[in-house]
Length: 69
Image 1 (spheres, rainbow, N blue to C red):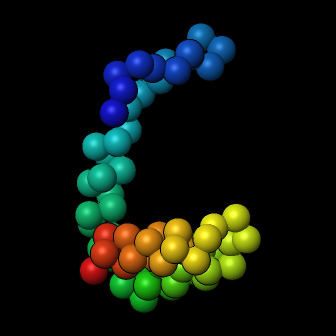
Image 2 (cartoon, rainbow, N blue to C red):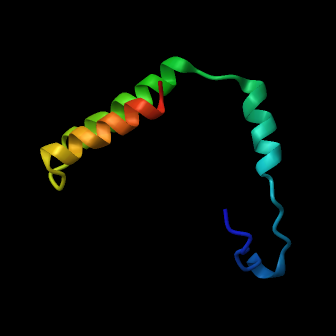
């Protein structure tokens, strides 16, 4: 991740809240059904993409499934 920061909005201070969001996310737990639904939707998007070849679709779906096992 880059250390370069975006410009301040109207001179305001930008705070890095990544650690706070990570902490909140860990407390809330995982919704496996929602994760599965999200992945299945992404697979459907890949399958219907007219700009991808069948080989590209196959590879993209394989990578997606491998990443979320």
